[in-house]
Length: 452
Length: 136
Image 1 (spheres, helix red, strand yellow):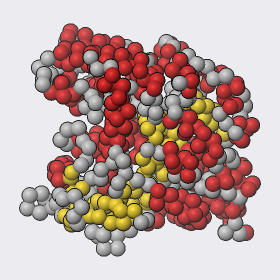
Image 2 (cartoon, one colour):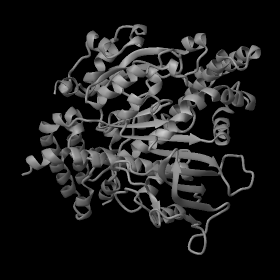
Image 3 (tube, chains in turn brown, green):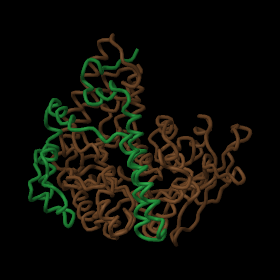
């Protein structure tokens, strides 16, 4: 009955539990011979999935982030039962479609960071927590920067460059400069998507440096706008339901870019350094200033566990969480609001060098009251991660071990053994929770009316 | 309510007017909406066969192609900055290097993740025989 376990393990996924289940199973094994009942369950699930995907409106209804897994919990031995339950829940969702036109608001998330600071990895973790992999739009421009999954669309704000590469060169401005970006169009289109209207969004081609013909973006359940300036323009900022800033210290940025670029022909330590330095004035003026507006900042710093370490392999990562943000309750360690320094490694858990250090406590950040959770060091073994997860509270997981499961699932992503992966996963869970709360609140009134 | 008309209908084709209406200044840069983007909104409602036809449109730029551009841009940046390393032109030139280096890195990641042709095929055609998966 491994199929059932798959369904359960797919619990964090959004509306298409079954779809997720299929891809999950495929990872396991592909074989020629099979048992009859499993074939039927497979084809059944894929046929359910299809009409669901076509129903554009489904996207806006019901707290569909809730997967049917509690039901499957109670019926471990009958997977036919589980499938029929899923069927029913789908039908319920389709019925909700009728009233959905009145509650189409898309939840908008902003992610700000400089180029080469881990936005893509974060996006992959985030969309994975939401369920299903995000892929570029099929059949569109192969250089499109957009990622689409069942629930989430990620758009890259570089698409709102008003000056293409040649234009920037002529004027002597970088892409970091607001003058190279069209904030009016950014605002109009994000607002339209939030209101449930599709838009024709330009595509900035990072290879050619030109603006390609636009692509159609339909309003998703969750819209993530990632790039250099999601919080620069006050109008765009006000559209965000939640915002994140990835704050990578200069030392780490340099180390990461060496890892990324040294293999590239033409690059050298000098060229990597020169590029960071030349961009720094604009970065400081236009990008770094946005972190004061973020609901959540992930700071990545060199470790303090190894004296004078500048390899950038071991990292100290801080998760700065603003207090008083609607639908967002910060994660805490042991006791909410206390100041705690924690070394999980000791008698119960042995860690390898250089160990792991945690810190948690209240602080202030740009005059905002915040909670800070900090991790220095890295996980070398699975039990270290589980041990840490079990001591954190308000994680917004759907089952015990979900953080660990997500981290393991993407162990090939950069940062899966340190605080960047851990905190990105946690922020993903918090955003899922935020989304579910917003949807539940919105659907509360119509649901009461149509209650059977 | 009228705002819902286009995404809800599902078969909405973006007219030239709606495309022009959604943007301000950069609109003038673009060529008129191509057939490709006219087709895309109907994607979810049409058959798999059609999707595959569209999928052959073209391939993303190869990592090698971008690598050439990266090394070229570094040379240009070094030249540009010789005169005045504090100039906007110098910053813009190094910004181009960063942009291309990031693009090259993404292209490498994409090439890595797309390395199994069967997995790629099955992503689009999960219902086909060769893509069925079974547990013991």
